Length: 130
Image 1 (cartoon, rainbow, N blue to C red):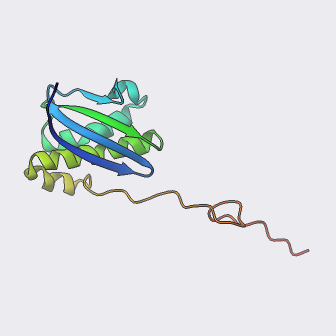
Image 2: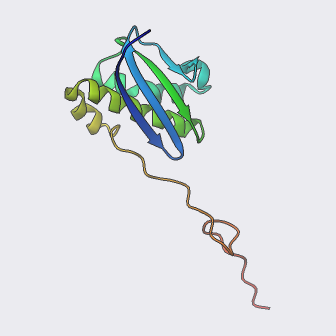
Image 3: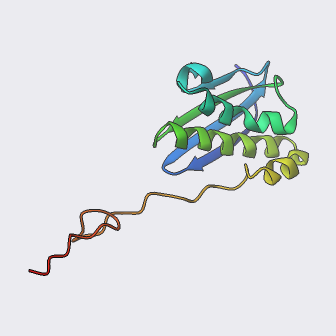
């Protein structure tokens, strides 16, 4: 069984990603599938690989990811956040470059809740003078 070098939890919107770093050759597995197979859009796969490009660690580690909740964009952002945290736990010198690129910050933007007596979060019923 493979030994985990480090792990990190990433979050964005309603998505949560558990990321495990292992010795390897750069394979990223998301929920049992390859990252390019899991994300149909190459943009989402690119977002997942960004922390490796910033820290010059491409091809050095295998990544195992369990992600749930939200949509594909939120999941890709959560993986990037979790991978950044795992890389910092592994080697603290990665922190400066990841923080400078904004990968260590949890994106706090969430969908605003719907309020009672309204059709949506901010939408009001149409005003009728008569």
